[in-house]
Length: 207
Ligand SMILES: [Zn+2]
Image (tube, rainbow, N blue to C red; front, top):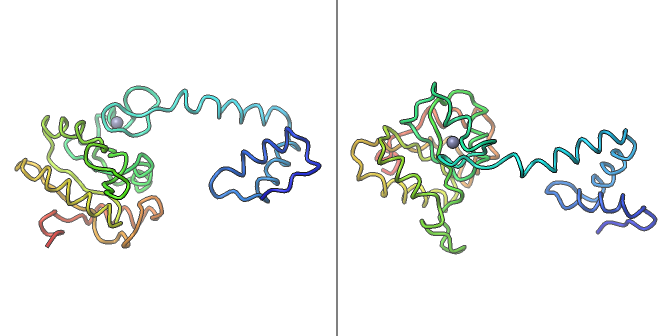
């Protein structure tokens, strides 16, 4: 609960909006609001402008589903990367985490979620048709980098079964350096790079 009695309405509105963001409590929201007010008006205008264009300018790549400024993302466009190696992740933010390690030179495919029967999320809700198409076009390796949660593991099993029929595709799983229950988002870049480097062939991982 934020106590905003005596706070001018326009400032109260800013504080309430800031407090609605994750990780920002009422006290921090108040401090940020007051800080914005103490700075030149141009700072607030720049922030407002950046927020206004956020949804306008940032969309999703039509191929892999990562964040993209135009139709295609920087990873799919980069001819230096190996398009025949595809790392499968749950969310666009996972791609950003993977890239912090700088070691990976393949491409990505964002599933936009993971299988979760309780939430009614089945294979049809994931971006699998687009992935089928990419696999048909020729892929050497699929790296399963879904989270180490129960649903993430179930998703990895499902994906391995779905694509194992393509004998020319090697299927691997990121190594167990990822702690149980771990979302990629919360891993440091070294743990994630190591997990990717030490990925294991799916058959060995499932044994
Ligand atoms: Zn892309």
